[in-house]
Length: 184
Image (cartoon, rainbow, N blue to C red; front, side, top):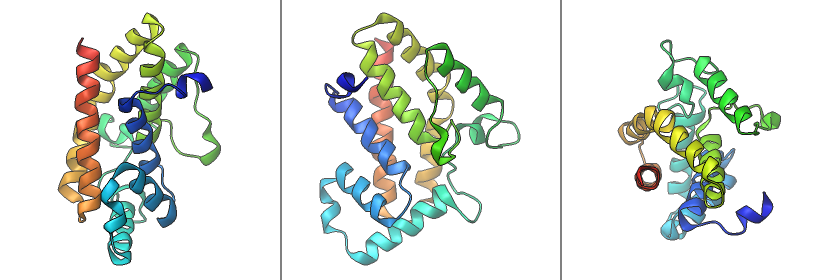
């Protein structure tokens, strides 16, 4: 798998940068991930970084009700619960293609960061195997398309900083490119 990551396309690299952003766990990793995504990040003041970190936590981490929960099951389950049937379905899909999540950090399998990473993995492998192209098409059309647009909309509606709105825009552009890739 390491050699596949050595030859990533710009689309795939952007997917991993977005993954790193959404998996950020403190102000330092958030700043590092955003700086890799946006060349203008260095112009942000310390106050703007603090506001972005607060916004990130309000949207994706808590402790209050999340304004844009980063878990597919929240959008796909009737009761909007994390770790529902849809999470088990994605786990089964991953097993069917020989993959699993390393849950060392206790983040549910349907977290947006895992979704982005799996998409990149499928995309990279699709260049050498039609089986992975089929899996990528299925994953995109039946899973990603069913919840990520709503997730982006919630970020746009609830984000209080330009930083988080910028990430939503980057994710939206990335999703548009993914949809173009699977419609071919």
